[in-house]
Length: 225
Image 1 (cartoon, rainbow, N blue to C red):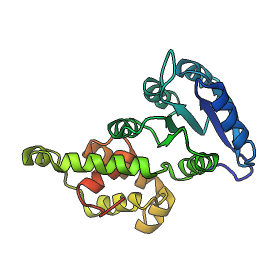
Image 2 (image 1 turned 90 degrees about the vertical axis):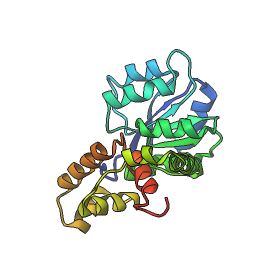
Image 3 (image 1 turned 135 degrees about the vertical axis):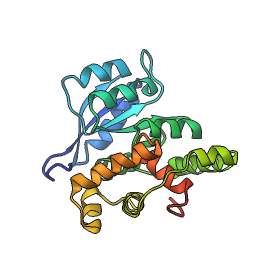
């Protein structure tokens, strides 16, 4: 759900480097529609914060002491399932990107990204759930190629029968349509669209919308990302 335009997007920065946090916070402070409401220097600190503070988006560093971003990610999703999480890293690891997006990350940014990219990612994740970039797209395509190279029996075991309505909704999700836009196009209520989306996750074994998109690409439900 989107907030009223008068309310800024509430952001938490979780990173153990004080200067990096300060730099991002300063850059985002120039944006009237973003408000950094808290900072954390490790995953454990962040989880304690989330007991008293609600964030729309969290910028989460992968490498932190005590509890890193990879360990913190599923715990954040348990506490605050609607919070969007953007992973920050210095590493370009395709298998890691896929793993993180399948367990709940909404985007994956290099820590060398400039402030406008970070701003765009926050806005896009908040409004459309996911922010795809060259890192995420390459990772998903690499994953697709590896799966297509699997033995035929293994691919057959993963086949799922989707009805026309489910296929249409999955295609529209891949086009980054919002739940309301999809509901209008297929003439269903937003709640019914959400129910079908959840059913698609169960059918395909996907843990997130990113997982559903990967499934759609792999099974040629859409031709490209």
